[in-house]
Image 1 (tube, one colour):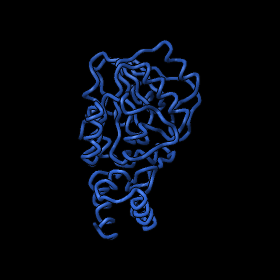
Image 2 (cartoon, rainbow, N blue to C red):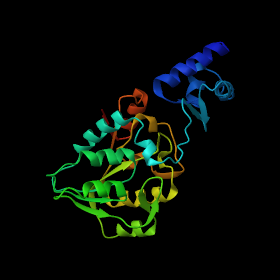
Image 3 (cartoon, rainbow, N blue to C red):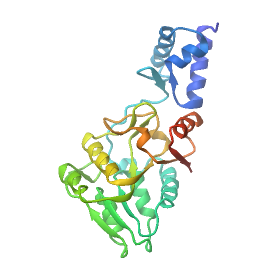
Image 4 (cartoon, one colour):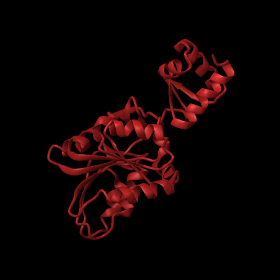
Length: 254
């Protein structure tokens, strides 16, 4: 049987390798009780080496707070640009697509050029302003209540618009991707709108850099089994990618 120090070392190494650990798995692997593992996790959390959640632990604080998009745009900008280029390959000539809000989705919009003959439905004022300069792109800006932190609209007016709209793809950004809980955003009204956007599209494409994995926002959008494609960067742990692929999600690594 391993000593306490050896158990702690095992837990931290496993956490670094796969981005999360589960209490029951550690208990089985080390042949100890779940009570012992929880005590180990509490000790390591007190040392600020991990964050505990229900039945598991992650290397970063899993809570995803609401943050101004102008701040988000400056974070992981290189990764977002590569993700955006890969997302562009998912868009076809004459497509009708939905673009959500957020800095990664805006990065996708920046890569859309003249010649696609697209119809774009969006909640983001930044996206609609940017794409309005393309003569062959039709932009449908949703109405509703403007969120100051994201420069995007939410509310019943935006939701009701999708009673008469159907698109081929929805390119969506998120604040959190949790293997157990699903996809989340920091605002409950935005989560409601995103759910309606999913219903109104044939294919859900999630664009999210690796910092969003293992995190949860305030508002749940959907479960992972509703996602068709996730485009992310190479810093996502292999174990996380494996779980997602086994769930039927196509993972594009850039």
